[in-house]
Amino acid sequence: MRLIIDGRKKAVSHRGDIASLLKKLKVRREEVVVKLNGRLAPETASVRANDTVEVLRVVFGG
Amino acid sequence: MANPAGKLSKCFKCDDDAVIRLHYCERSLCAAHFVRMFDKRFRSTVREFRMISKGERVAVGLSGGKDSTVLLNCLHELSKDLPMELVAITIDEGIAGYRNATLQIAKKQAKKLGIEHRVISFKKEIGKTLDAILREQDTEHPTRNTGHTTRNTGHGTRNFLPCSWCGVLRRGLLNRAARELEADKLAMGHNLDDMAQTVLMNIFRNEPSRTSRLLDPPAKGPGFVRRIRPLLRTPEKETAVYAMVRGMDMNYKECPYAQSAFRQLVRSQLNDMEELHPGTKYKVLGSFLAMEKAPGEHPARARFTACSSCGEPGSSALCKFCEMTGKAAR
Image 1 (spheres, rainbow over the protein chains, first blue to last red):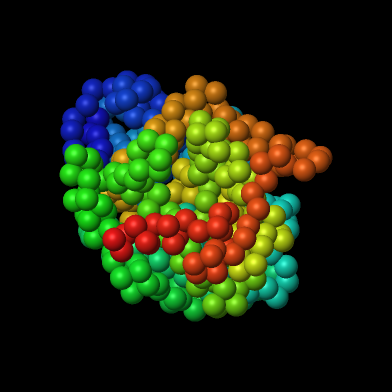
Image 2: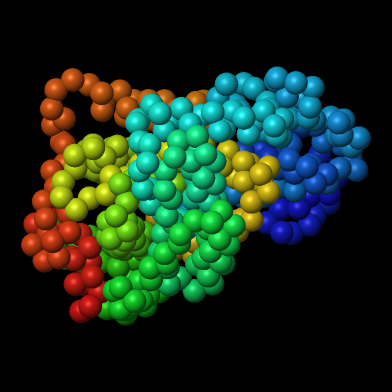
């Protein structure tokens, strides 16, 4: 799958749902929203090999 | 519509693809049902705390970030059923590379909704930008070139973090502007995360009088415009999802001074707790509200007096605003 996080693109091998992907990336689910193939998706959504997952940080100070 | 590439979770209420999982109630919602739930909760919070009465003039602290932008939009929607006069106030602290983008969003939002908008700057009101104040304070204390400033209180050295400078000065200017605009209420974009963090921070620092000020009792003292927080039951992540679903312009950039805040540490730990025990933030808020409703005089209830220097309301003889601006002027 293709991963976009903090504006950077990487290729990542992952099987499972978005929740387990966030755990693997050490990203707190409370602090991000995730787009799966360009659409907002809950952490329960499954990720497939040719998907694009974008992790957007939306919770921070300021 | 089914997503061809990934199996999305379905909405709890219909067959549409979900856009968010609400872990605290173990439900997923599609965009339409999420917006409906969000709006309903917003309105019930305003009702529950009797935040706004018909015909009132409500000033909205509009930073241009996601929370205040969502707040302004929700109040504008609410004003169609509960007539109120809205006016937006933006404080430009003068943070290079950060504030200008959100200031533009604030201007655009207010214009789009046809809401009167006032921009107040640190530079004009205090004579210095926040950047300049912090630079000077760091120069004054060269051993601590970390965005922290210090003072000697006679009880050892105490930090003034950038967020303390910004928070005190911004709150003071917002209150003054709201009063000058003859607002009945001052609406702030504080969300559930902010509230839970503040309650915990006040416990960690043993500052119960600060907690007692969170709900702002109606008769608070001369000069105060009563603050209301209609998003206090709304998790921060949900304001972001709401803004995205409703197609609002957003700038998801972190304030350059935010990393130095004690709040950052509490935020991270609270989010870890929320992940392990969904609903933690609601429970922290619930504990605070239960204590507020407990009968009898609150032992640490803050009392407000007029500041001996500027006459603005404060919790001590010399208000925090004057203490800090006096220090900044030195």
